[in-house]
Length: 152
Ligand code: ZN
Image (cartoon, rainbow, N blue to C red; front, side, top):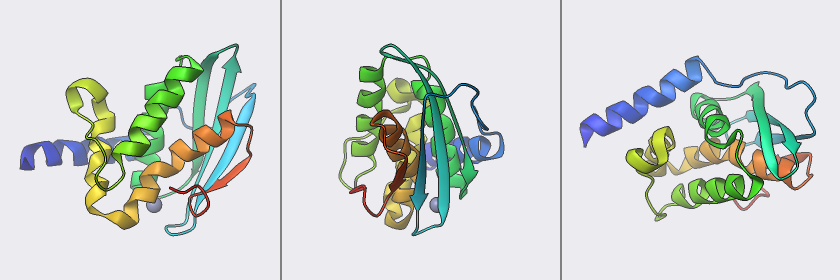
């Protein structure tokens, strides 16, 4: 068990250090600013939607390692997918991050499984869910979301 936790920790640190799909997104059609006042994380998510597909997604902002790593993994997990699939993945991750939520597993869910470590630290869960709430807000045409009003 210690080994998998170490691996998960490494994945998070690596995404924080070299975030994927980071920065402004040219031609973005949807954007939302996510705010987690408990930690001070600010994550902006920008999307290019094309028909029923999420053509591309970027994020930017200031935040702790977990908020950045989660948003970075999120962009890799959902880019290029159909909107219905994007919502399904977001729903799966948000449920999994709840205290007694269903597990994510490395073999099926890839690096996203590394986020499960935060369940042991309830104060950090909102750091991990922030980017996902911002993604859903952007899909719904909302421009701002706070973890304190998202029921996160
Ligand atoms: Zn945070």
